[in-house]
Length: 337
Ligand code: NDP
Image (tube, rainbow, N blue to C red; front, side):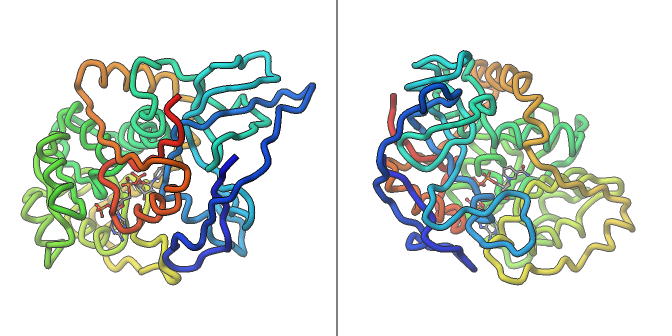
């Protein structure tokens, strides 16, 4: 059973050498237990995993990875052995598994059975899985859009961002995205239907770029990056605008997070800025899954994935997120069936 372990806790930018691919002895479902054995098909690479690679002195929002142990992650898996009455050999599931070929899960109740195996299974690491629900809950429950709203999305071509933009179009909003390459900007405009997009790395002045795209200001900012972008957005928000704070990826590898200079805009413009965490919305998953599966089948939502091959590609794929190497949802195909 090949697996990826954390070699040591990380400060600053992670490197491939912080992780190790090792061979672990195979284990079986213990007799009499309610565990299941999963064969992992697709593993997800997600920015929040960076936090788990650090050693926190105060308890963090997710437990730290333990050096020498396999790194946990979301994935799509097949049940190959089961001691649980609700799970049979051959069942397809998604949920929390680990960066390895086979994973023994002691509490399979936390896994979701896959109801739409006719759609690409890998989508359950993305548009039909955790990032999709993040986009859906963050946009509808936190940002509370109305038809005609001006919406801005950062990291817009990524796993979450590309869905937020498309949901905004379905809702009748005007949507602009930022991304870190011309290839990604092109995807936003031609594939995902954004009304406009810009490459933030090529803009001298982010405030000017936002003024150009939103002469009347922004109603909703779906925040994925933080830092200089957040400061520029605050200057361009409209009165009573909403900022759904999904993530702050530009800060994850900094030892000292940057400050926010334009916070007073929240007072002056009476902005509602609200963070959220997707696990709080897992109870809405089945409703979301049906709606999203419908959009995918009707062609109303499209999804771009960046698929790395083989368990040994996990370290590079994960690190690539922090350099913007992924074009679309980053995942690793460990086995196809
Ligand atoms: P993405 O697929 O968007 O991949 C990460 C992208 O972030 C990169 O491709 C890159 O795109 C961009 N990026 C990396 N470094 C920087 C930087 N320094 N400044 C600006 N952009 C940067 O990841 P996800 O869609 O999975 O995640 C997007 C955000 O959502 C993250 O902040 C993540 O933590 C958050 N999240 C939050 C959840 C929640 O429950 N609150 C759940 C899931 C995700 P580019 O080339 O465009 O720069």
